[in-house]
Length: 240
Image (cartoon, rainbow, N blue to C red; front, side):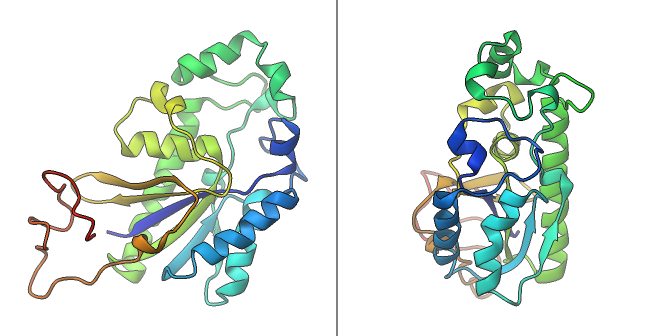
């Protein structure tokens, strides 16, 4: 099955100013975020990417811009389902101010019960559903187009990536706040017919180990025993 690289956008002007950006227009990468985007393209240089899908928001598109400039064979595809949570009336407000709201404690302890206030507010359950639906549909399409060893990238936002990771790990949405992904980090997931595998979480260093390994001659079994999609008893041998 393909390997999905979930990239959180680089640090934005809203991140550095402590504001909940949501779908606010005009939120761009700050200077540090621009450097992170350039470094990300370098970190991904050894991986044979087949596709790049992104949230339509500017900070995500800016994050993948250096990568696309270095890989002219890649075309950017966009999917609103990878967009940030619609925080409704919380959008654009300082996080320090929001932390005093009664709803804040529910966001921390029981996000599955949260619907953000206002006519544009979205529930965390809706966010999780659309995000997981998006990456699973894209994963299946990219496998059809490029085969089971394809590596592809989706650039999105912190809560979106955390929801996808929670689903991959079989965690209830109420536990997703235990997951942390930094700006410009890479989280790698491989969906298989048996189960999803979380290969990296919030990786900010070397990504070379995510390149597809050669398929063994003569069948699906490999040096770890069992099939390529089986869990390794005793722990991964480091040869994957």
